[in-house]
Image (cartoon, rainbow, N blue to C red):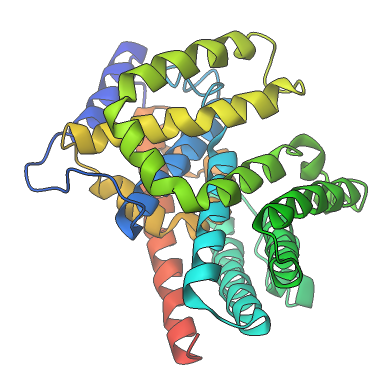
Length: 339
């Protein structure tokens, strides 16, 4: 199916614009409740889908012209994880072992469901059918993301338990996560991604540090949205010229992307924009993250419809539907085992 490039450009951005059209009955003020958490997680997931579609098919999907710049979505996830971990540990007052057990089972069971969904469906998307039942695969330990976040959770909880000073806890958490990340980067081939994404501990630590102040930060972002966007976007674009693979530029860009992302999400509240799509994407962000790469790279729809805006949108839709299915399956399993 041959679709003119100009029409692809118009259709993609028109659909995106329509999906965010303002709604009247929505919350005006930002708070760090679950709705805003899912909104910013959904925004991070959108950045990842957008970025991967652009880098894997740069010629075909040229109209995703910001794809190279929207590469900080995973760092944004880790920032949110740091906030959530800090707040939930303090509020729920679980014992160390109970807290870690809940986190470990929630993440690994969710990973197992997503990975098996991906392996079963992947033949339809140019991949190979696989039902590997080895323990590491079952718990998601062949996913560098899962290994990293479980490691940081463990380190944070252990230090929180051992240290009396909150700032000592933050300092040692940062040191420990960077140290473990350096060790992981020298291990087997499945951890090669760590060499490319060594900046994530900084986003995670920033989330932990800001956990107690996030409500004030969000209210400030809503009042000073334009100032934040201008002051942070200018150095971000300057750093971008040095390339996204050069350190310490990537770390600085990830740090700048945090206030930029918070400011952009605040616009959804200020102008009553429709954030239902982002909230849904945020709710199912883990399965969506684990499913999306194989489908974006090898979508069978490209063979039938060609590399055009229709096949791209339908591929994203398939990822979204499968994410909902796996997410609900994950929730059913957790309820069944009472986690």
